[in-house]
Structures are given as structure tokens and as C-alpha cells.
Image (cartoon, rainbow, N blue to C red; front, side):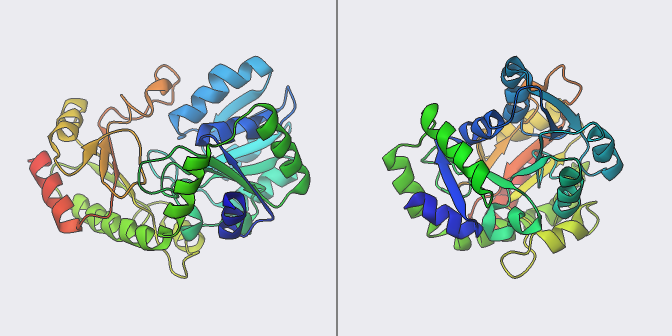
Length: 326
């Protein structure tokens, strides 16, 4: 029932559920042949980087990081062929927007699959298969579940051969979700549309407010008209019938010390690593979700703060941030 529901949401022929988002990504990587190259964004979730840098490299699966907003850089990285381009959009944590149709053309011309981690957008905002992707990956723990009470992942695809390979690996390595988590996800999906609209509304208001705050150096949110990815996001993140830009907002302050202080002083924003639940969360990526990037040359700014905007009233959340930033 769950896999059928996930396929229906994505508009895909196949969907498979996994024990976690990282289990889904791992099985997708295992479907490649040893020696193949995987391109990953230079602004990627720390767990994804750790998987390819510390685990898959032992299976002789090569990886290269690239700025996927730069078409010429992607094309150059694909010059000798690749097995997969693994993209995130919006990226984690600086919310870069990647042009999926362009990436699809570049990947397919090089004989590579395009897989997209769509966790931040969900199928309510963006359906990557409609833009040329071969597979869509989710940490369903986040927005799809929506209540911070389950751990689950999924992969959706229209490629029957890939689906068969993933289904075999899903069973062979035992990366299956438990029945209660599956039931919780089916329950959570019933309110996905309502929740995502509330997340997006709150995030947009907070992003515009942060833009004008004297203690804030830079705001990362694709819904801002001056964001580099705004135009692509407006066209690509419109699966709901109108452009909606997600519930994640990141911003920088003057220093790491100030960023840590803000994270510790909020009262409504709970300090935690996860995201996508009905409650608002705040985190310091450099020391939390992206700590595994230390020494990689891909470190995030130590002054960066990431917000997962929940469904509380935006006025209350803004007041909480005002206190913390004062």
C-alpha cells in the first residue's frame, strides 16, 4: 500500500520503500557497477558525501564533486562518462537550485542516470521525473512523514530495469522499513499538501524578514527575487499549480560564535539536526549535519544557520528569531 501511494504521488511507475533515506541512497549507489563515476553536488548533505567518500569508495565506486549550477563544469566532469549524476535541489544547506532539465540532458548525453534527492521539495512542489530524472530519492523521515516520528526512505522511477535491480537489492540487503513506520508515513501523507503550504508560507515570510535584519549577512531562500536560482525555481517548483519555494531557510551572521549563540537562544525553534516536521528546528550545519565535510574543501560557512520552518504562526517564529538575534 505504501509503495503504491508513493508511486501515485510521484506519478511514477515504480516506488520502493527503504529503512531510511540513506538506505535508499545506498541501494541506489549499489545498483551501479564497480569503477563507475558518480557526480555529486559541491553543496550536498553531509551524510551523502560521507557515503560516497567513506563507504562506496571501498566498492570501487568513484565520485567527484561539482558545482551543478555551472553547466560547463558538469559537462567537463562528464567528459569521460559516468554512471550517475546525483543531484539535490534545493541543495542542503545553501538551497542552490539546479536546473533538472539541463542536468538530465547533460547526464543522458554522457550515458549517465540522473537521480535527484527531492527531500526538501517533496512531490507536492516538484516532480523530478517530469523534468527528465531517472530516479527520485527521499528521506521520508522529513516532510513526507511530517511529524518527526518515523524513519523511512524511498526511491521512485519509471525505469523498469532499474526498479527490478533496486527491488532485488532492497530484499537482499534487508533495507526494508518496519510496518509501523510504514503506517505512520501513510498517515502523514494525508496532510502533506496542507502542511507544505504552511511551511512555505512561513519560510517566505521569515526569509523576507531576515533580509532586512541588521544582524544578518546573507539569506539563502529560492523564493527571494534576488536569489540566483529564483527563476529556475519559479518554473520547476510549481507542481502544486503555483510556485512554492519550500520550508527551509538558511542565513549567515557575522561569526561562528554569533551563529552558535543564536542557535542556543531560540525558544520556539528547537535545536536539532532533522527537518520537515510540523515543529520548527534550528541548527548549525558546520557542527551538526555537515560536520563530516570537515577537511574536504567543501566545508560550509561556520557562520551559517539553517532553519526548518514548521507550521507555527510566522509572527511567533519571527519574534523568537528577533529575541535570539538581539
